[in-house]
Length: 516
Image 1: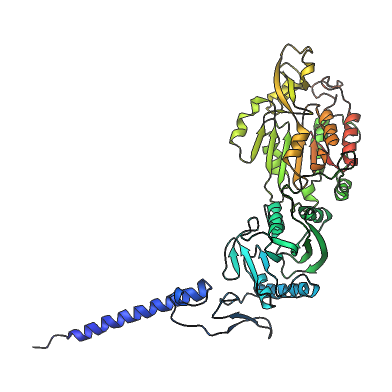
Image 2 (image 1 turned 135 degrees about the horizontal axis):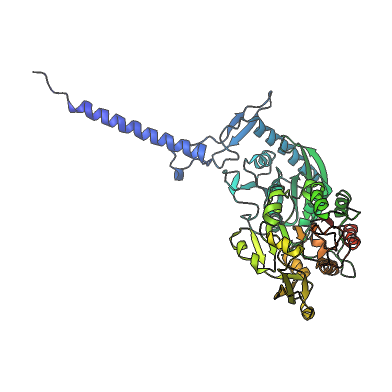
């Protein structure tokens, strides 16, 4: 009879397995602390091994110029993972060169408290630390410790007047959907006398001036030059260095530059856009419903000519919006070149027949009133009788008749018309209280002849300077489609008067297009 297997062998196997499991836990924890969190190893991190005082990790580069990433027992100055990407290494070298130049010119120093905004990789932060700017830190939506802290440019997680130098690379400002907030946060956290350095494209006069307008209430340009980039996303870079000389006012960009008469001054770079726009149709078209519709193909939109990135907000104002599908849904949201910017839409429409459908539309604010030159009650004539107006209304596009002030309510209306009183509002004053000169504002106006009242009012108040681009339908006694040889009796103005209105707008520096 053979003896039974002894228990000591079984216990040894169990203890050996427990020991191996414990060693695995320690190694796994150590690997997590060092390679994932990027933190130094200490007792609080449940780490049983100490790091040497200085550990150099060589990152393979081209030739013999390998990039060394250093770490220490007291704190890691760079991510511990091996960054072998050629693009990443090129970026660090590029920023090192940029920051060396900033130090040489006196805009940056090793003692500067510096911030790199919107830096998902931390290449610029590493470059700063490598050249001796030890107090450099970055922020990005996703933290990458210890170089990059969690935070976004429109809400920088630091106090007022905290940094000596702030750097925004990779075109971060122009990609931001909140350029105005981005700018104001940089100014808030930059100390007076500090420098903000931007790498942008801004390769046209319009975009450059839009950029400057974001900061002109608090900063001045001290250096502007072009440099070569290091990758295809930004092969050419415009480096702009600003110095903070004051605090940005809360409603920055809200005031309009005006002369002694209170009229606004449209800047020269906007006048240049008018010169590059499509020519006006000088001769009255015999078939305007065809000519004007075809002319849409010739329109040169501002976003097709220049970069509109450096704007606080993007706004589309549809004056006389009618139904959602009339122009907002069918044209603006589908065809207008928005450069991937999100526009907020204001639909101004007095006819209550169209109001309900706007309730379910996102990004649209309905103003159920009539745009006018002052705040007062207006009388609307809604024509349901035979004729051109009824035909247009039957298509669902245009339901309102000509808008007249209350004082004209004693006029005789066609017996088939409805008369309805609607509240009118001072459109020019509303515009001045709603948008700023730092917003990009597009306007379409189709107000059944009231443009001859509204446009002069926009000039009188200076509100015209707040509009970047206008699509204007001018109403005149044009040839009728239904009745060859007859002009529409609905409007008193002539085509020449409409042409004068368009010409005066363009001469004043307003990019206006003939609409239909």
